[in-house]
Length: 149
Image (cartoon, rainbow, N blue to C red):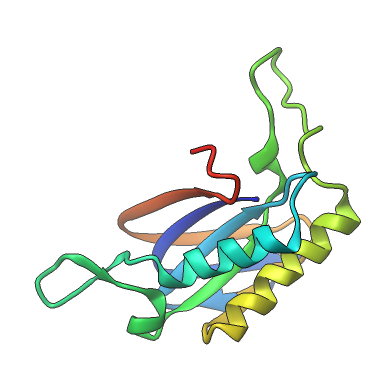
């Protein structure tokens, strides 16, 4: 499972012109599910996201988590994180999970984030979305449940 995690002052997702998910301070998480991912990957990533120390403390150091600052998470499915661009000009997506499996594991990440105490807003799985991200910092991190980076 791969995630692009961005610290934001605001994030929103629209489908067909309608806002379906929106947060103020917190994290926007673009989540890709790989074909070999399991519920354990979802648990690992949710735990990692909730406890990442990416918010400033009183001294300006990145020492606080989204939980500690009372922030929210906007979770957005993005299978293109498994796009392989090493050959040719068109990405290949053979490493991405099948849609049904990906949707289940995406939902598992959302459930686990909420169970860990974070309010979660979501995009819509398998829909064309417009994602608005107002990155704060900018702070952007890459996570991989298989620890390949």
